[in-house]
Amino acid sequence: MDSVYVKRNKAGRINIKAGNKVNSVINTTVISLTLLTVIAFLLFDYTGLDIGRAVVETASNLKTMFLQPAFSHFTWREGLYQLGVTISLAVLATILGAIIAFFLALWSAVNLSNRWVSKAIKIFVAFIRAVPTVLWVLIFAIAAGLGSEAAILGMLFHSVAYLVKAFSEAFEEVDKGMLEALKSTGAGWWQTVTHAVIPSTSTYLLSWTFLRFEINFSVAVAMGAAAGAGGIGFELFMASGFYFDLREVGFITYAILLVAIVLEMMSTKLKQRYFPSAVK
Amino acid sequence: MSLLDVRGLNKSYQTDAKVLKDIHFTAETGEFLSIIGPSGAGKSTLLRCLNRLVEADDGEVIFDGQDLRQLKKKQLREARTNIGMVFQHYNLVPRLTVIENVLHGRFGYKSTFQGVLARFSEEEKERAFYLLEKLGIEAHAYKRCDQLSGGQQQRVGICRALIQDPKLILCDEPIASLDPHSSKIIMDYLKSISEEMGITCIVNLHQVEVAQSYSDRIIGLNDGSIVFDGSNLQLDQIYLKRVYGMSTRELITV
Ligand SMILES: Nc1ncnc2c1ncn2[C@@H]1O[C@H](COP(=O)(O)OP(=O)(O)O)[C@@H](O)[C@H]1O
Ligand SMILES: [Mg+2]
Image 1 (spheres, rainbow over the protein chains, first blue to last red):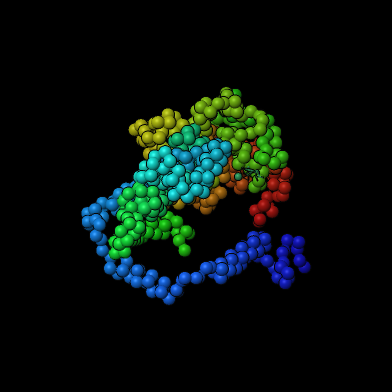
Image 2: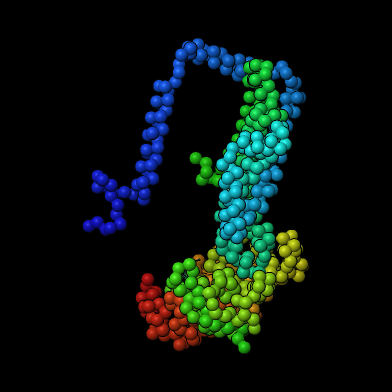
């Protein structure tokens, strides 16, 4: 006998997923995207393109770039210095961002703040996050001019928004009972924050900050190239777009790759340690 | 005059269903008072309405001569220092040490600044160690709380309440997560707190036998109403049926 709660599909088999609608929407989306991709390739304009030659030339360019890296427009010391500039941009944006985000996150965590203040901050921050970092840099460039100031401001803006979300989620995970206990002793808000919330979340806050630093490093490289923020990104821009020096492009790419790999390794370690469920 | 005098307390959460219905009772200094009742009867809500972790809809909570429900934020903090609370899940800060957790009980006496910087006097620290010793866990003072067993954590919770120098301690199912042996230790400590230190204990319990062997007085709560208020001798099968809607014999086998 079937109870009214059992759901069956058309073939009469029992469903174990709650919503059928979500699944069918996802399926439709995937199928239409696949179709669109195929159609797009059929509609491209291929005149004047010799596929064979294109492939060979690309391969030879890549070979020069990555198998014979060298630098000619700057010295070792300058190169390292420019790399340092990029890392500093990222560090500055990350640390300032983390400090500002910490306070905003406290006020946007529903368990620590007023419901309306929390909502307001969350909406504001979601709006900032929805606009890409590069656009923020360009917006700030109107006031500060293209350069490292605009880049830092833009990166800072986006870092704050990203970290507020991450931090406030960490704060909201804090055990409700713990806050209740502190409240019942007569402890005030700041006392509860410093002695219950921070000790319980500090490792998460540090990990998120580091993860953001990793992102900010790559953004800083891009900003050097796109917004004249200086650093290794600018050298990369000059080498590729100005000198057409493929070997130098290769060299700079390797340098960036090296830093990125080190950061990636460190953040993987952090993730394994503190967010085991996030690592697949 | 009674230490605590609760008059006409009503509470409903978002829905219209009333969780507490016209609650009247008093508690004397040094009294050990148990509140029993089935799960969902409103025991936790009642306890939290007393120290205003939950705001009641109307009624009076007269504690030590003042109506707590009339107090402004700052006065409420001050009043709360006189009311300790012990929880089923201990509610300690797991990453901090035992001694740090005990000292959290002093925050109510401190300015924001002193509290944030954890400025505790030597007397306060000595008092904390004295209490840890009294509850037999001074050896663990510098351990992180998450390394302690449940029974030990609950004793830390009691120390945190005691260091407040309270006149009243509210215990929400203090032994519901503990094994029988640790439960007995905790109940014995709570009993001695009320007898030796003259601190009133109001304890939510769901084990009738435990309530009967420790309490001076028992309040039976069912569906938000007080259906029994008297000594454990008066709590017979007829009343138990009113509290739980069935006899204890059935209750124990469930
Ligand atoms: N925060 C809350 N929001 C809404 N309803 C609640 C809340 N807390 C408790 N309740 C409801 O109030 C009733 C009494 O709960 P509670 O006081 O926890 O009972 P007890 O502690 O006796 O088990 C229950 O029906 C419960 O679902
Ligand atoms: Mg309860």
